[in-house]
Amino acid sequence: MAETGRLWAKIRRSRAALAGTLLVALYLGAAALADVAPRGPRAIDQERQLKAPGAGEWLGTDHLGRDMLSRVLHGARWSLFIGVVSVAVALLIGVPLGLVAGEAGGAADMVVMRAVDVMLAFPGVLLAIAIVATLGPSLFHLMLAVGLVNVPVYARQVRASVMQVRELDYVLAARALGAGRFRVILRQILPNVAAPIVVLATMGVGTAILEAAGLGFVGLGVEPDTPEWGTMLAQARINSSWMQTPWTVLAPGAAISLAILGFNLLGDALRDAMDPRTSKI
Image (cartoon, rainbow, N blue to C red; front, side):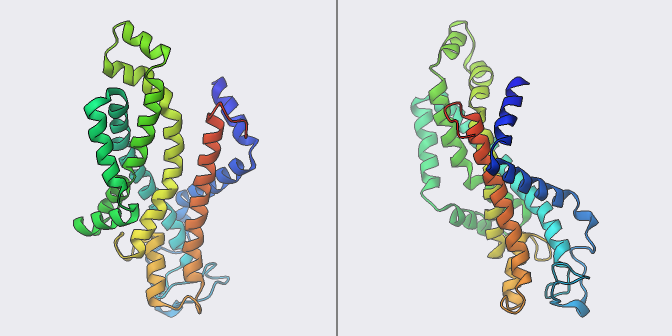
């Protein structure tokens, strides 16, 4: 409890941390309160096509007369769901691989790291596009692809952390007392390499939101009528001129940028607060 209090005190002293926390809180609030939007995100009104922002439609309407504010708010919910599930997929695969590679060493380490190197040889977005194009566009395949392309990030970080921890005195003492490898990993190693995992996962949500939006923009995301921010940008590019109707692009584009900025600032703050070697905050 005292350690948590010190961590929170460090975060509160950082302006960047407070800005990131505020942006993430606003993002989570938008996702939670999406149902109070003035109209349904899929409600079509042909008489209100491409209306500029005003009193009735604060962010204007799109080419089908759908309210942009409602779609942006519901898009926060979709993007959060995609980001969290994608990060969970990457964690569930990457963390065990990193633990095995770092603790076992030898052939296991070589096999895992060579597989990771092969994945890192391809740009993440191109690899995600290849996965979704092979499996077919769908929400599940989108989250799976974004999660898989981020597995190497977690595997390499966990492996590096494990290799630093596995020779420390308390780990050697646990082994000397007869603790098995699995028990040592769960009780001694994993809790002491959790800090970088938390930081990566926090920043990874923002990265996953961006990658999912990129896939949606090229038509490999969710269903076309789903209020997902990348899909909204793609539809604005195809069905209207952004020079004449800039709100159709600015609304989802600003939402993506602010969400990513918030998670990155919060992740940086957590990294600095959890690192005892830094006095930045």
